[in-house]
Image 1 (cartoon, rainbow, N blue to C red):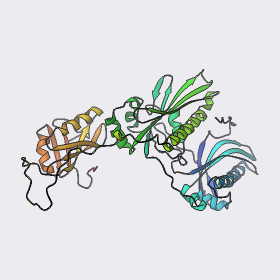
Image 2 (cartoon, one colour; image 1 turned 30 degrees about the vertical axis):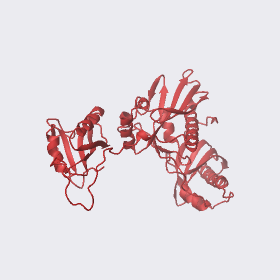
Image 3 (tube, rainbow, N blue to C red; image 1 turned 30 degrees about the horizontal axis):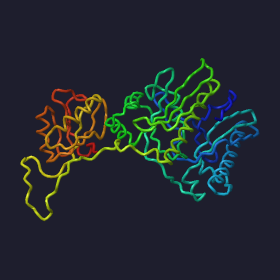
Image 4 (cartoon, rainbow, N blue to C red; image 1 turned 180 degrees about the vertical axis):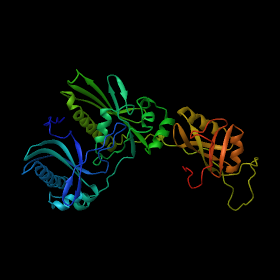
Length: 424
């Protein structure tokens, strides 16, 4: 593992991302935004990254030296990228580089009155750089993978329940050169409730399907780190694991060590990189296949349609049910996880309901359950009311709640507008 040496007190934070805004030839820097509530990913734009570029520039002022160092880093970075992608290592003008460079990464930086010494990285726009070098801007990637970074420190596991250094490291990681399509939650809103240390150990597929649908993912990755501190401020050992799927299949294990607590970000960044390499190798070897049980299954009951040439209605024995199925969206209060399963179970018990699946989950609010009903939507209303629900609305979108129960939004429920109705 490459250890980055501490820099002077005038240096910026390690691996701080500086966004480039080129206006009239002036390059401006902006810190990556990291809030107390969550982490904003450093870069998810799919940029090419070239790192480890060393510059040593002298000028009349510190600002001029720094500006000159960035210019040199752009030129060196483009040459290195061109050679890497088979472009021969050609050069471009500074104005052309300004249009394709999307960011500067400061790895080490020392600023003097007239001198600038740094180790930098350069981010190039994948689409623009690929077009100039004649390479495909799109690469074959995995399906969307929900990423849950789990950290164990002092014997306690945490994902988004509290701010962790492991969460920060995954927020800094740039995914542009990876073949894994990481879905990285910000850690805000319901993330701490849905994605916690306990959830990573639950093999039950039903709740996993709900969570993956909520985040638009098809599979789950759980990168894990166990941090062991020999003494306060002293060496830190990180034991890393790359897990895959709800059954926590282990892809790889390894350990890294740094000499003091100041090197923790470096330790975790190196761990993220090695875990990403392991996931990419597993994808290439066919080891990251999605579990079929994580996909929503279509209704198993099949309805045989009458012959197209026979216009005689089919008698089903129930005047309220006709052949075929109607998709109906039910808006229902879900104060907790137990209420979701209870509501789905109750709806499946209604005659004519073939399936009931939560398509939009809002714990503590109003969720949407899609019901496949063998009949006209108007026929479902009396069946719901007979089982204790108050029903508001018409057509294929209904608002239901238990009689006597307070509305989640407060006050009496109102009929949803056709234009504003949530659809699956």
